[in-house]
Length: 367
Picture 1: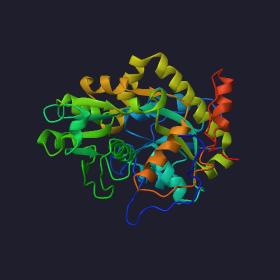
Picture 2: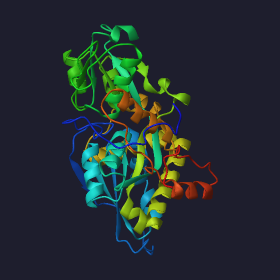
Picture 3: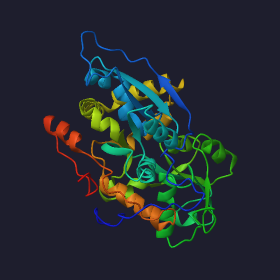
Picture 4: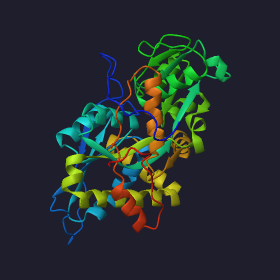
């Protein structure tokens, strides 16, 4: 679909549905503070700030932030301004934290970013950079589902109603010519909204036949005997679609642009190191996951999950636009006003300074 098409009108979500408030992972809403960042001796504060509060999920699709924390990229870029971290389990709590000032900058999926922006009528956040693409798969029980046409009539889990994967699966179902009521999940396919934390157990018990889920849940299902029937990346041009963006509160962006630029510089450096050193980066991300949650991912989950994710500075703005259109098509969302959701000025400044290609906002940037 054209990058600058549609989606220029006001938001109106179907009554009683917490649509597009759910993060790509759907892991709940608890947040955890991590104040262990070390400030370099002799360094100076940026913008006079004592700290910059950074939020992210304990998920491999947020590995830019995991590695940036673990390897000290954020702290190095911020100097004597302390990098503080909060680890979230779901989008709503991160948006709430951004709105309240509990965090300044966050890594988050496209659906909660869209929802946060439209619910505030474009006043609370900006997407200021990209982080990751891909890492979403349809994994099925190979004894029950041997081909894509066999999905009809089966029970397939998505993380939560209206979340990024739920919308993608509903759109795929529609493309097959099948009918499903988006709200109830009933129809030619039974869409079963299941928290990613319990999806592997639901699969083992036989209560679902498969799941359209992000990593590492997809690889956890494979480790339980599931088979990857479809990689969502195969449905997108160049096999790229946004799964994680970087957002900032508009207030913080206006008042502390140097701090925002520093975090973006660290993010670009982290992505460069991740792409140049995939094995070391995978280990670093897993080490931070263990530090944050107390549990590292096993190799048979970590390795395949990591391979399916691309780390990029490009927010892939046209694909966010298309994801919103999919929600409209599914009947979960009336056309939202997304104009101005992006401000890539500082990111492009950082990219130019690093000798890298600048990125585009698909016509949805600040004017």
